[in-house]
Length: 106
Image (tube, rainbow, N blue to C red; front, top):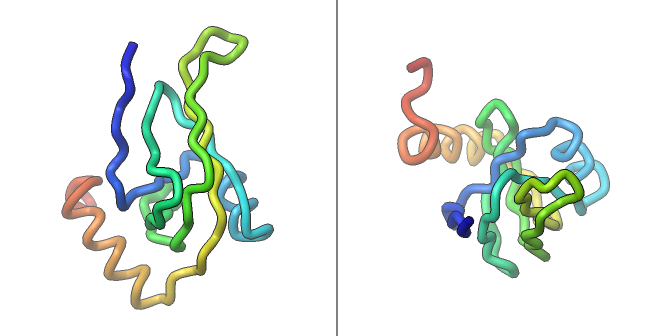
């Protein structure tokens, strides 16, 4: 058991529903497996489940716990700062593939 650190610039959604709620309501949360540390108060780039840069969000809360099924999970609450422009999204997505996700199409 231990905490896993997230990259300070990456907040990747695994669920389209969680991403939709953030974009629709301006606030949202996501649940990650394992204990993870998300920097509360920091702005980060949010990515869709298909690794596309979508928006800038601010981490409001990060709660690591063991759920009722005995799984280690981290809930991350965030607020939408703003959606990225098409050009910003293209550049951030390309950089993320190079730095975090691996080469596109590989």
